Amino acid sequence: MPKVSVVMNCLNGERYLREAIDSVVAQTYPHWEIVFWDNASTDASPEIAKSYGERIRYFRSPETYPLAKARKLALAEARREYVAFLDCDDIWQPRKLEKQIVLFEANPRVGLVFCDTEFFNEKGIIRQLYKRKREKPLRGMVFRELLRRYFLSTETVVIRSKALDDLGAGFDERLNIMHDKDLFLKIACHYELDYVDEPLAQWRVHGGSWSHSKYELSAAESELVLEKWLKTDPHFEETYAEEVATFRRNIVLQRALGEWKNNKPERARRVLRDHQGFDPKMLIAYVGTYLPSSTYLMARMFIHRFGVDAFRIW
Image (tube, rainbow, N blue to C red; front, side, top):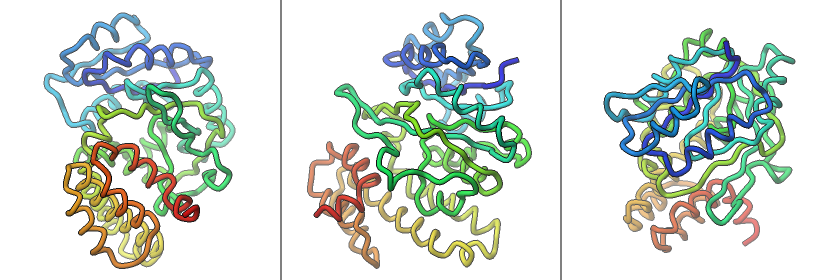
């Protein structure tokens, strides 16, 4: 039985699929399987996946499901001690699993291990997530820090299955953009996190990605994530007052960026103007809405990752 189940969800992903699967096949850690969930693709994705033989366990939806439901169904098929996630347009470096699994085995209190990642497109590397010293994430019990500044990228994450079983945790089907964030926050609340300080994954930036095409859902889904925590613990907002305030500011930013993406810059600026309080990211977003909405994807990455530092440069 494989130790690591790699959950790969695919909807018409033939363009980059071989590159993604090959990056798993090339892993120096040999004890893996791919749980491939074909979300009713109409291109050559099924044939590509099946061509790899028994290392890929192929499943197909009878119809196209929302991403959270498809991931939930794929996760249920995983035969695993650990679970990892790789979308069909992203890539792993060969030693990713090898370097992450050893951290689990060294510390049974660790429920999730992640690593650094690079954002790239057809022109090359755009950004390394934790390259600068001030961006290095913390290890251990980091739930508070994740609430304030969410720093996980799904293609980097490996989860100890026992953590999922103990918490009875899985993907919330009501969430299609924030379902991974929702799950990882649950794990971080109860387990330690560790990470490998190397860019062992790559996240492909392109307009066809799910996170881009459905970004306007982000604000409403973030509100639902926060609402779930507030209902779980009546003292949650008091305990995490600063973090909750930051979380709510980010919801405002998500709502504004969603309006801008949908060619409604005036509505985006109204959302930002109505926000009470000063935030460098808000100011940068406000200025950004005067640019064409076609620049939204790159601007969103800039605002979320460079916002404060860019303001200091100004």
